Length: 220
Length: 401
Image (cartoon, rainbow over all chains, first blue to last red; front, side, top):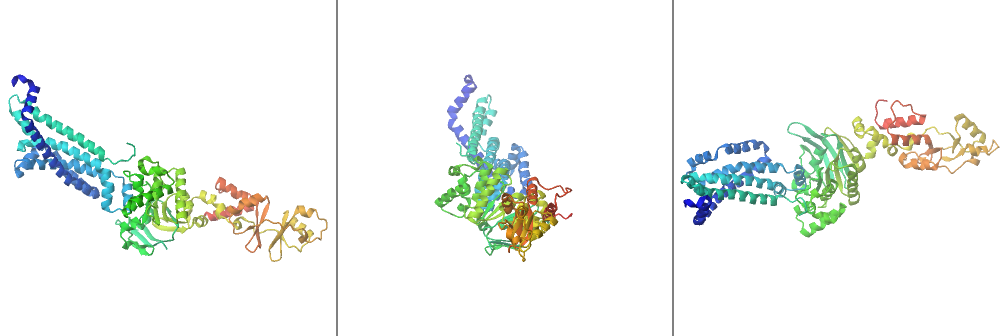
């Protein structure tokens, strides 16, 4: 093993523990996704809501901002006191951190819709619901997706740290590497997939974001 | 009565009264322009018609039905709505934009598409534009779509809030022609908010002038130009426009000389010559004893006759050109000038001679219309001019006489 060199060791690790890395990869990914999904379920309606009642926006966005300022390891530890060890605590943490980008982007997206277009929609006889579904959401969807994309990248980082409180995942491999003597290859075996996951998710979501940007031109 | 507004009042929670005791009856096919300075309540009033705002008190009825008892969503679908910045949905094609209200009303896909084709034709735009997006159209084309979109579900009343304010003058004019056509040929009723007086006077069948939430004057454009209610209206219309409008609002009787020199047919040639000499004129109008115009005698005709006792009736020129006292100058000025006569007798409905119009007076009117208002301190060139200026000042509501 010693004479293999760092990259050789890494390849050796992957060839022997490939399925293990993959399952950890999946776990990390799922924990992040669950957290962000919950964040979207709560954050998007909240963002829409404060865009309608704008006096509430400083309160809600301020609260989300406060959450964001707490270091993630501290947040994990605090929540661990209440929720115990394990994935639930990490999902909740990811959820809390994804609130700010999602709420903020939803709010901004809603407000960026041309008021004349909204006035015309209402004036032509659309119900509030129809205005929301046919004008507001389509026109702000790309901005909302950008918020989710942001949240997911943050979420992946938090999930990896979440291994400290026993949620498993790629973080486990990294921690193992840091504990082992000459564990550089093991650290990389955990860190590289993590980075890859963040980059790929970002790319995929930016693609979705572009697709969801409403067409305003008949070219292409 | 299609639309009736009675004692409308809009008061905001902060106590500001936007509209106060607004009354208006609108018939089918009318083109009503609301005009006033900003903050005059014109847009507020318009927006109460489709319940984008609810009045504090007063009633609005459409076809006799009180709109405050109607579902606002249903009401709005039955009223066309056009706003200044088009309000086209940027993420929908032109066709989808036109089909918005028909779709809300649950029309079938085929019927909607058919209507979209009809509407784009009405907008005088090419049919293939239906598949384009609003961002690919020019401002004028977008607003054409905005206008026909408001008619797509066969709405009878169309509300327009300064629809052409953001367009350049040439585009604006072509759109004004479009809506005028829609009103005149399709019998649509328009409620039109504008701050452009030319636009209001050009398009409207009636103009509602508003200031500080109150109606200042409600009348046809002609009557507003002829009798501005007060100084505010005069200022809003503008001195310039009042003078330019003179040929179309002044009647012949307002510029004529009221003391024409006339003679009866039973008088003799000598009498005629004496009269011409006394009054220093070269033409006499001949009237019978009831004052009915018979013809005229000219100095040239008189010169050829030597017998001083010849009765006037023998050499009266009966081919006399005359105008009615109540006809508008704008309608008669061309005819008068083309006749090439120096003076034109003016008669009333029963052909009684009431006055005379000289070419000088007409030239002054034309001059004023082309060059704008005469300077206030300028001495009128003739007594007739003095009359015109007095008339113009009177029409202008100038109180500083």
